[in-house]
Image (cartoon, one colour):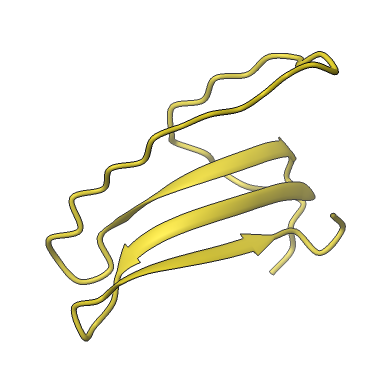
Length: 72
């Protein structure tokens, strides 16, 4: 997949963080159906991002996963 173009349709809060910035978040996905989940995405641009995902798997377990762009 060519990473030069993405369409994003999600709420985004953007700001420039200073050196003393600390990030804290609470994620509460309902995970009722298969592959329901929630994610936290740290995003600089389409080539520099990291994702933490909470997702319901096909056997009913709730799993934690992560992924990141290859350039990080």
